[in-house]
Image 1 (cartoon, rainbow, N blue to C red):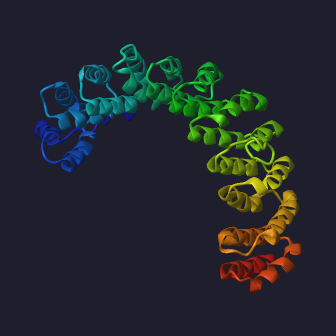
Image 2 (tube, one colour):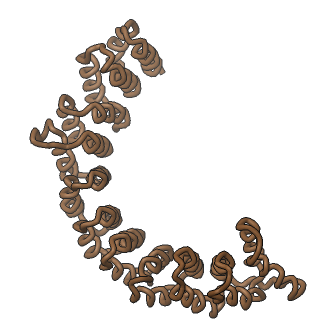
Amino acid sequence: MSAFNEFLPNSAAATGATIAGLCQGDFHDRWDQARQVAHLGEAALTDLLAILKDEDGDWEARWFAARALGELNHPQVVPALIATFAATTDDDLRQAVAAALTQVGPPAIAALGEQLAQPALRPVAVQALSRIPHPATLPLLMAATDDERSPVRATALDALCPFADIATWPVVQRGLQDSAPAVRSAAIRGLLSLRGHLSADQLVEFLTPLVDDPDETIAQQAVYALGRLTGPAAATALLRLLPASNPAAQSTAALQTAAVQALIWHNTTLALTGLVAAWDDLAPAARLALVQGLPTLVPELQPPAAQALAGWLGAMPATSEHSLLRRHLVLALGQVGRAEAEPLLRSLLTDPDQGVQLHAEAALRQLQR
């Protein structure tokens, strides 16, 4: 929120002309004029309020007036914006007023909070509150997570994440079991925001059921969240998605790929051992993700990673269906930089797949650096 600009135009006529520019011309002309209005300060206040309150006036003029008022620090601004917010039936204008209230900042919080009592106004009020990073919005947003509309619940939950306040834990926990995917998604982000307050075991306990979520997007989000945690509990929850460790698992290729990527992030012996063991049962996309991920492991895990890469490459038929994966295996061997891989890479310089040959040449150059 900017302070009132003391600059005044040369005459009242000049001020009137500038304000009048909001009421005529095309959108771009009005946009340019609105930028000038913001510099008029108190001189423009009366005219801007009049335009905003004119229910029969030009819609775009009211829209621009609302935006301009959001730049002014004056006691009359918030009541006028709130009155328009509550009275208008135009969603676009209401959004503009909400954005202006967001610009006003903390002084608008209490006024917006009062609008939460009206169900019809609650969605936009919550959106406006979500853009004001102030502790005073916390109880208001928490209360909004009880709304019967899932978009409102999701918006409120997302807005709570930056606070990372343990007081939000009950609503986050409830959100993890919400019937709406968007709310569960926001709750996962909320859960991760509380990592400083909850133990790793608690985080894993609440994330694990969501890897079986009927919405695959939510399941993948839970998998990636587990990938951001450390410890054997999170790794075990991810490894069970790989058929080699759980023959009864029915993970989709996308979920399996996400689990592979998340386990790579763990950078642990437990994760690597489980991934290598699962190779034969991984979908092609998951295999590719594993091959691309192994070179990113910490140095102490590079030797077993190189051994696994060489074994897979040596056992894979030189057929067209395996061409892409073989090229990536060769590239990964060069990236891990193990000298013992050189004989295998040299043997591939005469491979029937020209792409494999080229990747072998590149990999050998990497080894020689």
